[in-house]
Image 1 (cartoon, one colour):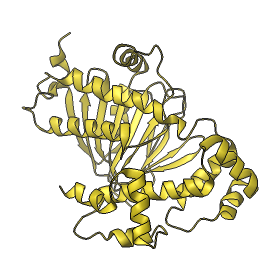
Image 2: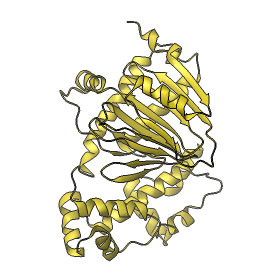
Image 3: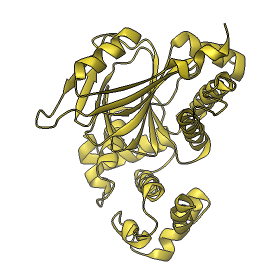
Image 4: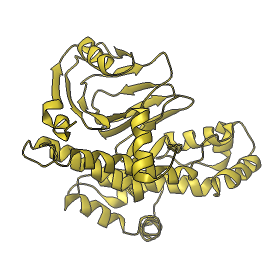
Length: 320
């Protein structure tokens, strides 16, 4: 079968104010899901592009209102969600708020219950289990798809490579004369994208699967209070355990103390915001202070140690 079949003739654009149209479109392609509007005061303004690639289907767009999508059964395919603007809420064994600079990887066998905020513009990459297995074997050289992390940092390392490949594909799809749109590099782009996604499995040890409940609760508390002071006692209370036990659990499962993890996550959050900020109007000092870093020189030192560049360099890199 020719690769040309996967070019722009398999590209569609859906513009509608009816959620049932979107639900029917998705249900024709994938497992049956319920899509419901969460805030009836908002009028849906749905604009979604759908592109078929050799191994995946790519959806990009927005709904214009708060919506929720839910399956009654376990997921069969791999779903990667990447918000480019706004946020996505995921509810599974734990709840997560996914913002720009992060990717949410929901693997087969998981429950899918996800909400898009009204201002969210994002990506959903859907890959069948057998296609992911094929790329894992042929391109990565592994017999089985390794466990992929639920949350992926897209601002550094393999995650940044993944984000760059996604951006390249989006840019190429906008130009019908590009090599990808003409079907010349479609398969190569898709293979590269999935290979990068598979490589994120190496990062899963940073936040291992199957964490004890106190550690899971603590990580969620940190995520929800990144712009507030967090003490060890507060963290232990939220985790329903003692300070001492929480410290031991963090050392055992994360190889860091609770306070070190708090600092790391605050720095990661600041970096994500800098990558999305307006370089002309954003104050690095104010952003740092809002996360509890009041000494500029100390903050810059910690930031450089974590990311290999200063926060100002990160901010300017977006402008460039």
